[in-house]
Length: 385
Image 1 (cartoon, one colour):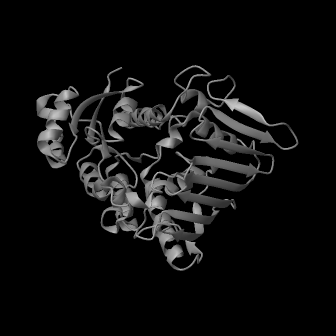
Image 2 (spheres, one colour):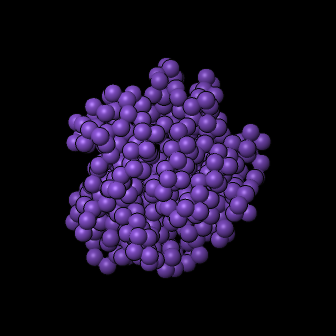
Image 3 (cartoon, helix red, strand yellow):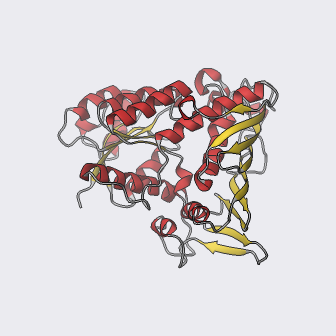
């Protein structure tokens, strides 16, 4: 099978996310890394591309140069990953979709709800894939949770409780560190800090595993370090399309927490609990029975979980492998579209532009509700109301 061509925008030397994408795209042998714009400084970006093995003519100085260069090639990239600063996501994603490229965009997909709606419309109009990297949905046991809910193991899901809390921004003396400061600066981060950065992962996860969308929410947002213009802690209550009640807490000042993404589901017939820091175990309590520990890689799991496992049971399998499942899904989707047939349902698991749009609407709703002292507001994008 011929590999697909892959290009990366952003994720240069020293970045946090670039190595994860390059490793993840390569894991299943679906993609060749053939093109990139890896730094906002053209010379440094080209040099780093050469270091990583890109041909000189495909190690570009900026994304516009890459768009022109790849558009003119018969062996153009099949998928472009946008891993640049948040404020640039919309412009780059829109340009590559218009030119007929499939795109995987880091979250947030855009800066506003209107921009996100434009991306959804453009993806539908062009027939191109636009995916959003809610990469934690690639974990095998997250996909098993989703399968358990879908097949009715929990009965009706009554309550979902999600968290994404860490303490890495808790030191007020570190407020002027550039790596921290931009996250709380509206000019660079947009209308929300901690919820848009981390809390939205937890909210998307709640929708992903329950198969329901967030319809209404009430939020309490606060800057516990007073010098910050945007929130560093948020508590959000929400109601979902299938009647499930949601509770979500996110914080960047929770000293003692490291990563902190966890999700719990409580249904009529049982409850589930999963934590990203211990991703190989899913805790399942059927009603009236003993607690069971489901291990990633063991036998008799769902097809979705089996497909998402890369190494044998008992071995650690972390975030890059979860991202790898997003890339594997995308490869399947790209090949299916090229062949003109429907995607394999087991492979059609990646977060889509519509998820990015719903997330942007939720961020806007959290900010609106927080400013109104917790008023309940509609969290749906206008096109989905």
